[in-house]
Image 1: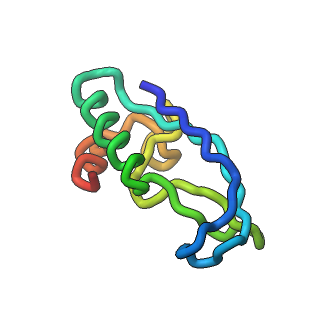
Image 2: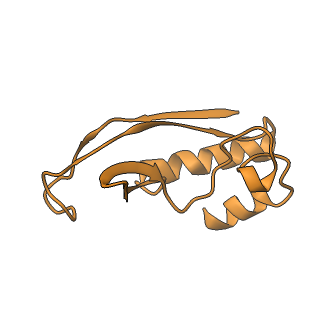
Length: 99
């Protein structure tokens, strides 16, 4: 299962830390196994996205940009845990605990 999200560039709103200041969006891709547990996690990740928990805005080289939040995502099919990929025997359990 491949999750694709396009976050558009925008400006901080009233009530945000820096109202009126711009930030850059980006394209984000995450992977889950195509099985019952992977689809369950996809549903939970969708709910987390709807509640605004998936992304955050961080300063990077003097510019504000959208980045992944605290929920771990697998951004590669391979490379193991060290490269945010599979295999990672603990990932589904870990992300389920966070969610």
